[in-house]
Length: 217
Image 1 (spheres, one colour):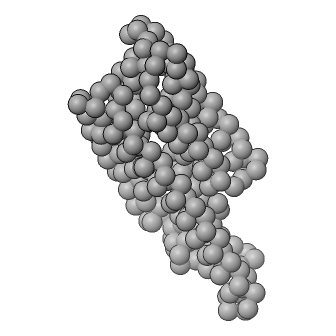
Image 2 (cartoon, rainbow, N blue to C red):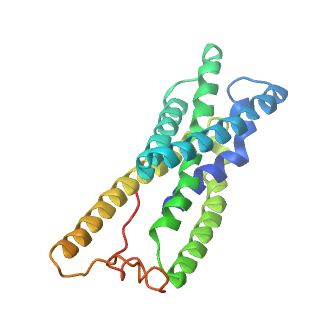
Image 3 (cartoon, helix red, strand yellow):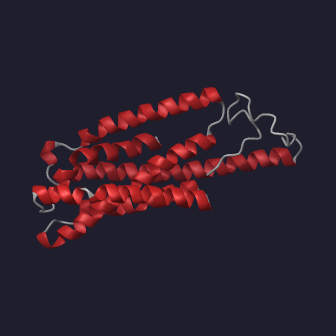
C-alpha cells in the first residue's frame, strides 16, 4: 500500500511536470528550467532523510515528516486561486510537493529490516515492485485533459494518497510496537527462552514465526 500510494503521485506528476509549471504563468522555456529544481529537491530530501534515519532511527516518523510538506504543497496547489502575483508561491508549493520521495526510499529500508525468511522476503520484494509498476501506470491516468491546466481533481486524488500513507504509517508503527512488546513479555514470562546465541538467525523462518525477531521502526 505504501508503494502504490507513493508511486501514483510520482508517476502522475512526472508525466505532467512541465504542463503544471507552465500553468502558473511561466513560458515553456522557463518551465523547463524551473522543473530542473525538482531533481535537486528530490535528491536533497532523500539524502537528508537517509542521514536522519542512519543517525537517529525512527524511520516511520521520518517518513511521516517527509509527507507533511507534500500535503501542504498539494493543499496550496488545490486551494489557492491563481493570479500572476502568486506564481512564485505556487512554484515553491510545487517544489515542496516532491518531499514525499523520501518515503519511497525509506520504505525499502523498512521492508528489508522487518521481513524475515528468504522465501517471504523474495515474495514481498517482488510484490513491492509489482505495486510500484501499478502505481506508476495509474498515476498519469488521474491527470485528465478536461481538468487542464491546473488539474484540481488529480491533485485532490494525490492529496488523498498522502493522507492514506500517513494513516498506514501510523498504524504500522503502532502494530510493530505492540508486536515487540508482546514478544518481550513472552521472554520475560519464561514462555520463550532467550536466543542469546542467535540460533534462528540463518533459518528460513518468517518474522511472524520467529519469536526472537524484533521489528525496527
